[in-house]
Length: 298
Ligand code: GDP
Image (cartoon, helix red, strand yellow):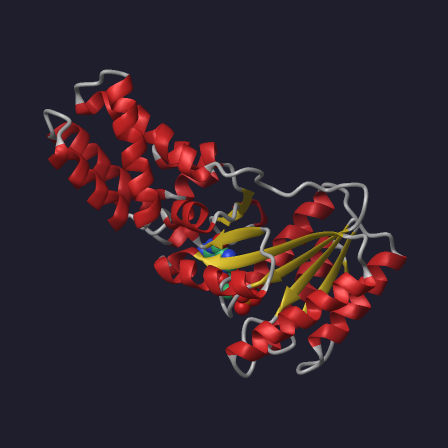
């Protein structure tokens, strides 16, 4: 499906290498594991996840008395899945309003993600309010207005340069008054400097805490999958400024670096909740580790 085709480049990058060693080695020895390690690291799975996967595979090979490299492919797939399964995946709506703060640097796909999420939630019959709080990037408000129109969602916005915290404040009041199921807040990815950006996020968080303490909260960091290890570094920085509850990994369709999904989960312990594998609404998908790894090895 879309996931299988969206992950084509990543599959070429990782799985073709894996297949070549499963076919190329006649026994499971240290050379075999070293080669596998290199493929996983080159595939952007990260040192941390790679070491865990190899360690786990070695234990499984021993336990199952496996002798042939070809026989341990399924065990490797299982080990990768285990590295990716860290608790809950897509977020659950309870019988109260969810406030979802969407953060990330410029150009990663925040506004698009908010728009697609709004569309999906509306399809599910949810009442959605949008806060267009990226007032720093001129086009963000217009982009979101278009998504809101298409999705038939209520949107609060402001002029370019308007105070993002004030927009979130207004949007919270609107979400409460309308008894919305979900308030989705787009935020700026660039302010005058990084410290400024992180301070702004804290301010927005304080407003939501104060004005809507009973809301169910989610803070999603959007990361551009094509940036590989750089995405991981961004996630670390945002983790310091906010209580991140999940990751959205976009643009996996255009990259061979999809293995970064494994690295993020394994190294940061933050679940990937959605992935983007294209420009359409259907291309924003709830992340399921089993489906992801199956699609990778499809
Ligand atoms: P923002 O600055 O973070 O709000 O980024 P935008 O939402 O404006 O997105 C930047 C670009 O990335 C746009 O051209 C989007 O269409 C594109 N984009 C977002 N998600 C995906 C995805 O999953 N796949 C692809 N191919 N493009 C995406």
